[in-house]
Image 1: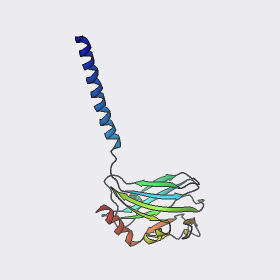
Image 2: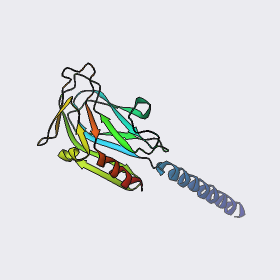
Image 3: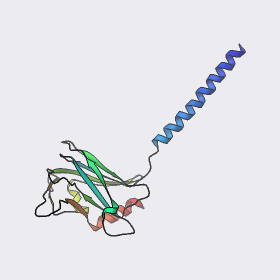
Length: 176
């Protein structure tokens, strides 16, 4: 009888201890670092590589040192193209380069979203023009949200969304 109580106590102790470890592991897995993120929701039909440039307090100019690429898999369906900044980087301004594939076909722009902690800022459809200037190598149809790449006479293919001054204000609202 005494041995049954000891065995039951031992089993119960091991069970409770292992459950505590599982809860700790779950807590660790669910913790996500809070970073500044930019998400484009678009239909991009051909594989490509999008690039996001940013400035911070140390510079006003966009350069390759402060940019990163995200591969985009071609699809007929809308997809989120997410740029996750490193934990210690907060941009002061952004420029979006919509690909390096000079054979890209027209793309559908659905939304642009910036998020930081529990705050977010979203531009949908034609509201992209509120915070961005469409570059020379893109034609934009406000009614359909279609961005049509056009290299034209340029030597380098560089379709981009260049920020207007009020984009900085929206970033500041997010980080304050």
